[in-house]
Length: 133
Image (cartoon, rainbow, N blue to C red; front, side):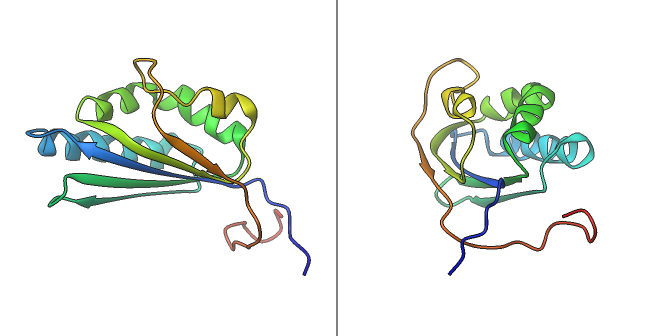
């Protein structure tokens, strides 16, 4: 079996919503996703919420590490706004981001949070536009 190379990177962020901040979290996430949809480099963004446990799960798919850097430059104010309403419980990276991306994984206040990097083994996607790949 041939393993195809891919530069895509998937982020999965599990956030604990602060008590009393559910409405603020919803507003901040909606604004952040709307901004990313219009200006961000992500190939996909999806956010799911478990109100009973006050958890949210965000999935973001990037073409490569350069796209992650661009996202961070563009979205910092939106990320900070979201983080006023939650804490990162766990962060997972699927793929092979550049070393500076891994080193930069800290909260906006500079603290580190738990994360895991899982290198890609095999797979495919159908996200590339015809003629561009």
